[in-house]
Image (cartoon, rainbow, N blue to C red; front, side, top):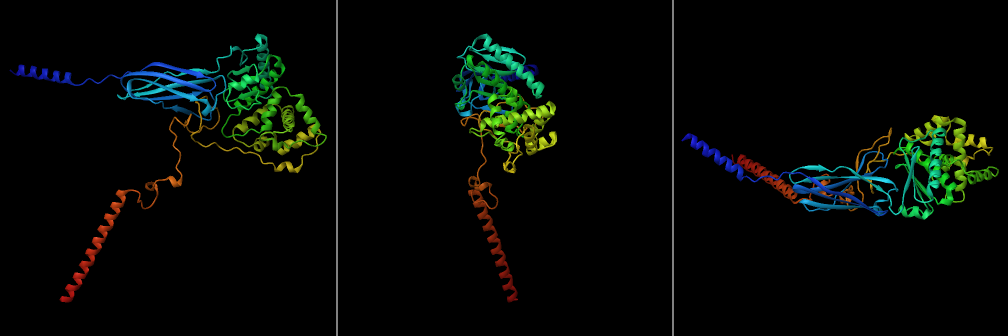
Length: 469
């Protein structure tokens, strides 16, 4: 009998266990994951995921190979309805966020969660941000990748060889180089270039993107000589910008542009403007060239002076001191501090010795009154626009990770409220903004009043009893 009861009991337990609902096993899988370009306006990400439980969250993480001060993540939150099978899409609108340079590598991945608590990170994928309307060809070697589509092989090879020679000259004379290849994109015309990048000025014919190691130039086949000098100029900007990349430093414009003109080997029109200004003592004060150059006829003279000053420093003091100057500026020293530490004079002192070297009149005292920009540390904030995750600069302070907001329609961005917007519940002192608080305060006052009244009655009764006695 006992054995029979035990068997029945075991059978009942088995039936109960079988009667329990079976929980769906979670196994999140990616069915589709792709990105499509509408160059240069937008980049659309699409994906489909399946799971044994309802998928409750899908987050897109994305970025490009741009050099940044620290790790910066861009996230997007596509609209979705929880289900075992979900399809999502999100568009990176460059017209709102700001365009990437052609040739940038964009990466992305998805973070997926379901109702069972399972989490899934899709494999990271990449796409090249570049138009597909041109039959691009590439010539590689010597740490230069030259991309072109017009002019033939000879045209492309000459531009590539000139860029390699410029890179070698800059490494030998200035001490700037690169560990990774620089990509140079040659558009067949200025118009083609302007169609590839949003919001560029109409006069732009070449640009350097130091944070991406990319140069873009509009060069037609009949502009070969100009193209070779321009790519050397922009290549110098990339190398100098990469070496000095920091969120703390400030590179004087005269130094940056002077090095770029040095990189292209000088220009006759710049030297002519300088030679005309020396006899009449109409040189621009060097300190006033620390910021943007004047948008007037004096701009040619500004380039000529900058090139002459940089050439003087390199010929007189050599490459190593120039490299040290750039590194000190990168590390946050002002131009005066860095010049004093490396050469023993500040900006005014440099202008004095340079003027003597070219036979110009002494510097006027009025040049000292021009303010000079000083570096300020970039605060940690939520940046507007796509903020890609990329290679971190070496030997520079790294600010805290921040969450980028690619467009106003995605990614959470909570602004600090103004004093007028602070709710009464968060203000110090007595709070009447909450009904519960008002009731509690009223009850406390009532209790205190009752106690005081009781005490008063007690004292009166006691006094009367003493009088009766």
